[in-house]
Length: 548
Image (cartoon, rainbow, N blue to C red; front, side, top):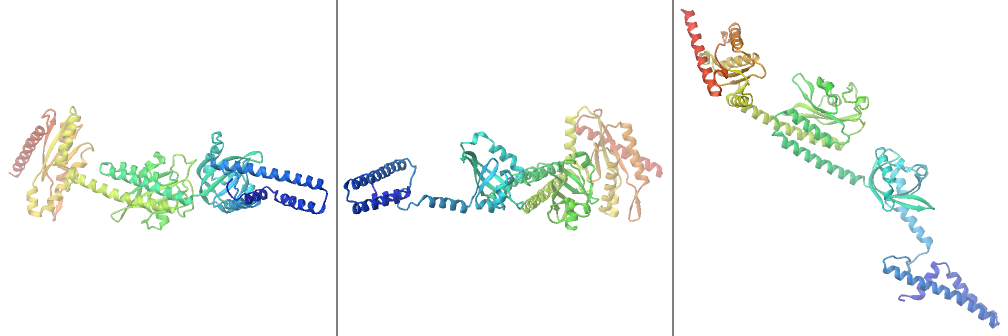
């Protein structure tokens, strides 16, 4: 054996509470030797004490060997060192550890808390007496009780620690996220659960924020990628709303409201609301939550924690299940394009106080990205419009008209229609006398009146300077001719005034019917062009005859 044997022996005797007996035995032996002269008594006493000390020595050697064997296996059963303290001191140390442990430690037996360390008291806000009168479920947040109950009742975790991050509620109502570790043990002959929980609220919030930022980044990437390819602005609105609801916690329903020319907010996209109720919905701007809460300063994102407590407003129930759901709180962001209010993005929850400052900042950032996206989309839309429409008359330009014509001819080759060419009469003299702005006025009047006499599915385009081309569907040649003659008559009856002169907007036209007059675009245009000039010549001849 290595080490200081006497010192280790006395330490062993002290730890096993036999050191006083050993010392008394030695003193008794010395006393007997002095007092008694009877050798038999002395020998018996020496033999008895020797046997006791020999047994103590045997126990020490046996335990030391066992300790050496255990250390080789990495299991330190006894700590036989010169610094070893008595059992009472170890219990004090363990109790000190529990009292100063930064983690919450508590013991559950039969659903009751039977022990809690000071950190548990500090974390929950309850006194020890209050904790001992509570069930463990009372410390778990309402939305997680079922989850934790299910986990603790799972029979498969008996031999393993149960670990989860859960939300606990305090006496004051504040919530904390804790890393929750539970183990089953035997305590006083009965099964118990010992729980170790430490506060990870800050880490959880940071992780949640990171997750939301990642989700936000992914959402905005999808929106940006979709902007260029979206012809229908409503599809973009629905995409924006869907992604906003994914990012904001506790978001249940939402809407994007667009401000129309009458200063009313109308739904462009919505989710969670009854479609029938939303179909004819409109709201005056000054009756909106955002307007009322901000006092008319709709320039920033605002949280309304309790909608029903908002003065001078009425909560309209447009949800699909109003008996089971009602707006408790909302977060509303104005959409501002080129310095003007364009609309609002609203996210609603059935809870009061559902949204935090982080949510507001998140939606504000989201709002700013929506504005960028919409500006790009509107710019794209404007570019598309310029490439497809005539800027002066707002009807199709020749290139796009020909594209639509060929598409229609390919898809509906068996459908009859009429192609018409128009030419404004006397435009050059008007331009020369009154200027080109007056000529533009005449062109716009003609195109506007012609559009009013056409169906939505008919096609109209500006073919050249004073020439237009149109396709009329589902109308016979006779009816079309009567319609155009009626239009000519209305122009004669309602001339326009240019510098106090009355100018009649007169035009010539030529009609070509598909497929009787031709089966290609070129054939039909040639026929219509010839007939238009025939009509123009006819009008000139009639005018000359009248003048004669």
